[in-house]
Amino acid sequence: MNGRHLRIAMLSAHSCPVGALGARDTGGMSVYIRELARELGRRGHTVDVYTRVHDPNDPLVIDLGEGARLIHLLAGEQEKIHKLAVYSYLPDFACHLENFRKNNDLHYDLVFSHYWLSGWVGRYLQLWWQVPHVIMFHTLGAVKNAIGIGEDAPELRIVTERDSVQNCQRVIVATEREKAELIRYYGASPDRVSVVPCGVNLETFRPVDREAARQKLGLSDDKILLFVGRIDPLKGADRLLRALPRLGNTSSLKLVIIGGDEYSRNEVEKLRKLAAGLGIADRVTFQGIVKQDRLPYFYSAADVCVVPSYYESFGLVALESLACGTPVVASDVGDLRNIIRPGETGYVVSENTPAALADRIARLLSRPPRDTDAALAIRESVKSFGWASIAGAVIRELLPVLDARMPAVA
Image (cartoon, rainbow, N blue to C red; front, side):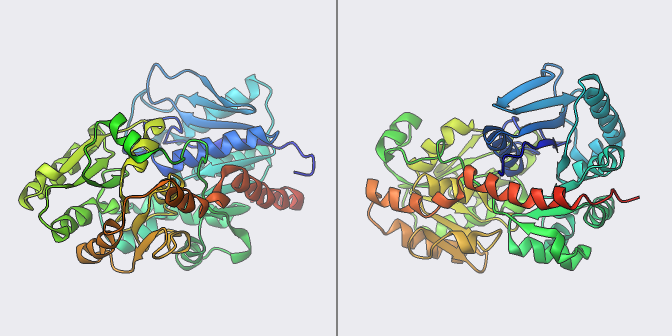
């Protein structure tokens, strides 16, 4: 962009961008950070992504691609811990980061933090280095509390998010909805909030022949619904299970659920019991965590991907499904009302109820099986969300922050 080479310190303190997707703290944000860092590197910028060591076997440095790398720092136990527990180790994280920077004679033009925990660290780096601090929260504690589903965000998070909003130079959000929520809950200045959508890797996520995908995965010729995401109450998998009986008693309709790790065993067990109580246990398969390179086969094998979430900052799963040519039924979360084309690439339900989900799913299941042309038409609807476009938009938001040369907040 204008021949400028940016040196960016990107922070993901609690979640490793190369961790297993679908685990407790590894989801869309990790995909976003990894893919954005790689694309920025391809465009000639230098990106160092800092995260904490989650395993003693984590290498210090992992190459993410040209110009981009992931750096593991000691911060607390060298194992997975609850993300709230990471807060106690943030000073260690910041100090180890600074030591790494000094020992390797590194200098950065700006700090780009992801999530509120990283925002705490970014605030200190902003002061130490006298460089701008840009933050992306991905989810907001105040919004989660307002929804009232699942575990409440602690007041510590709310206070830290508000402080980050007031003291950083720019907040990047994925939707206009999130911008409005930042203004409403945290008093954000509208002119310091930029909207840049999330992206999708169009090389990884592309249509695969439906029958070939099913054969590779060992799936039958049934009608298949797909759920992909963390097994967390906010993701609404229970809504989808309750929708299944409304689609008829035919045994030829299956639901495949992808996601969940050792920390979500209790939630998985609740879903299993619910399925049994609804009399559909034999129609539901829990796949657990699936590596990203296998996800396109699941998306392509499915007749419909369902996103019944109560809260999404954007809705990356829907974007991945559409890129693979598979229609989506989703609740009205994130930016899905602007991404899914009603009747063409799927439906967005205004009420996240089993009845509403079942009605829209049934409409899609009544269609003939997708052929290649239909899959490519669905994919075409999200071509503009490729990471090259998204990275370019992010840089266009970062350059004015650098040009303003705003002094660090005292």
